[in-house]
Image (tube, rainbow, N blue to C red; front, side, top):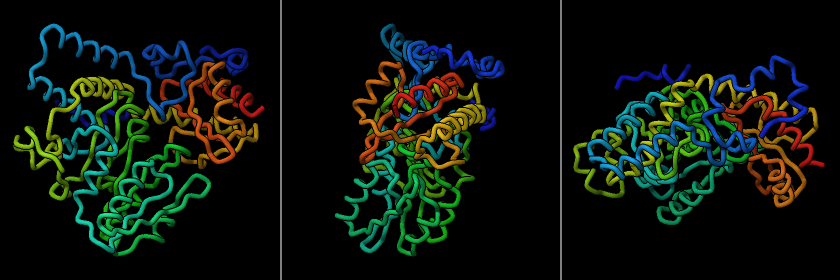
Length: 395
């Protein structure tokens, strides 16, 4: 199947909606997608950073998978062909080669593979920041205990970590910089190209947990200079659990090895990232992923990002007008906006449930962080509805 990256570019609100300008009210569904997400009839869903909704196209793919298994079953050849179809679609989405991609079970598995493949020695160091997902410190703590590798942590300020904070910690013994492409709390988005230049300038590699980024906008991993990244598929890709896509830059394929072997490692795939797929993958979830990727391709990642950024700007403006403390840096280009309230999470959750509003709450010392995530199916009415609820959360 031929596919270029170009293919990927391309609860009812109340009186507040009626008071909006006619041009806004007419844009209830500018991408024509809300009908594909049944949950939107029941909730104001602003929680894709937690778990993305699946579209009707993915529901249909899951049903077809189950029905076909019940009626006649699949051959291994059919299922492997579907996996390669999903691989082709994902490669086009991120600007990678199909030989640079492997299907794993989780984002954490990808980082473990990188760490276990590199020849760390006592006195080497790894650098990450305090915005990484909790799995990352656990991985490197074991590395420190077993290999004598030094851990260096760049500190965030106001929800962000500039490249300069990493530059102070990187030296000739740095082997790896690891970051979350987009942080799961503040939504801070790293300058990956600058981090790649920093790492490569010291002979190190750059790894990224990309689960909060891939699917939210256009990307070219080759242009960004990323060496390795992994993304689960249940957030912004709006597919299922149990499948994560691992990317390894082609020039580094020889350095990356699976700690496991199995029937698929004997299939002549040593020259590609497929060598990491040593056993039977979660084929049902891969069928769902293929459907989700086709759906996103039809919309276009450029349009997806433009939609979320329009809503982000509207929401930030509304929070600022209400003098609510915002955790997310400005001009950040991610679909996440977090702000703080003083109500404890349990009390805030009751208000959100009563309002049929889906967002995430995270304890942050004496405050509660409210994380709001704008997907391409959201609209201006959702933003204004959330601003109404934010006033109740801060009352």
